[in-house]
Image 1 (spheres, rainbow, N blue to C red):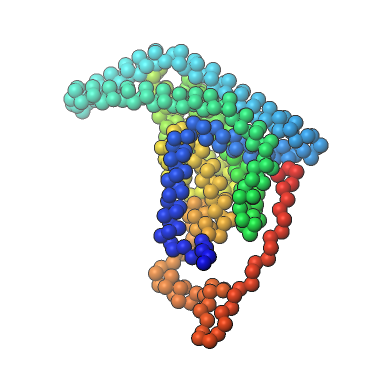
Image 2: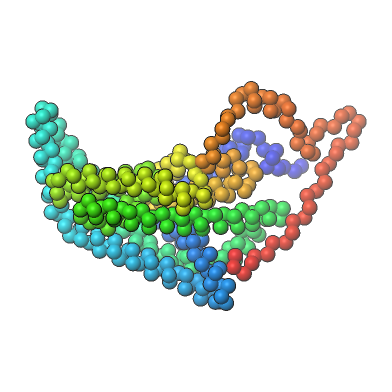
Amino acid sequence: MTTSRDTLPFYAKSTFVILLLSLIGLLVYYLHGILFPVYFGLLLALVLLPLITRLRRFGIPSILAILLALTIAIVIVSSIVYLLVTQIAAFMKDWPQLQQNFELYLVNVNRWLVEHFHVKHDFLNEQITSIKGQSSSLVTTTLFSLTDVLNNLLLIPLYTFLILYYRKLLMKFILDLCEIDHAPRIFEVIEASKLVISSYILGLLIEMVIVTILNMLGLYLVGVKYVLLIAVVAAVLNLIPYIGMIIAGLLGVLITMSYTNDIKLPLGIIGVLGLVQILDNNLIFPAIVGGKVKLNSLFSVIAVLLGGVLGGISGMFLAIPTLAILKVSFDKIPHLKPWGMVFGDDIPLKYLSWKHIHGFWRKAPQRPGFEVPAAGDTPQVPPPPPAPSAITIGEDQ
């Protein structure tokens, strides 16, 4: 007796998928400190792979091309990290004075609320104590999360080099795990995902650079202190849809309010970040990234929140690339195409009502090879599928 995936009932498939997702979630939750640097290395390898392919066309040996591409990436990232660490060091040096100024600002707000709205002192004191703790925790948690990311930067280049060096071995391993009938489809999915995701991540990096420049120009014109720190943090957090820019705005307002009583500067920060967000959503992102992979906002927010629960700030950053990889992969697998569709942003002009669905099933033809034979007829067995052709892994794949 032979069994097939197609003969499994729906509830059995759903149970298997839920158990598999639960197992993956547990592994990510408990091992994210080990898995996330490897995942960052994989994404960086996908970004560098087109550059390595071009270097190989000039006759450069594979290992030298990998080292050259990785060196270019390290120089660029190190320059950004150096500027960011300098700003963080200056900010932490001024932190005691900034915290004192922020507490004075809260006292003035307390006095103004009591005079104009007759709010009780006890209630306001409790709220002020809570706000001070939350603001300090927000700034400290964000800075320490960024520090953790910087610490992982020491491991990411190593993982990137090893993934690029053993990429053909890893590809052969994946194909050998599959059945011979499914190997061409798996190979097609991997190749399509590799091309789309590499261009998608590169587009995100270009978008982040443009948003950083726009933030710096706007904040400089407003006259804000720690321009580079706020601009870079806002651009990085902008990768997290909706939530990231809100966090960046709160951080910028808290930092500014801690050293000045001028209400114009916090309003200026909100205005600059809001304007850049509008430009990014309507012009920058659609022009640079939008054509690569279209993800809808609903599942993007769910993925970001789920990534934050499983892995903190790093998990939130990895949520969108992961969702993009899943969508590209699901679009190439017939049984998973509905998931790829629901992750996307292509809204149908019409929806199917129960009347249309009922009529569709009544008129739907039977699947080939599954006709019920009449009495006395010989069942027709469909011919076997043709043998798949051999798959060769190219030099630069």
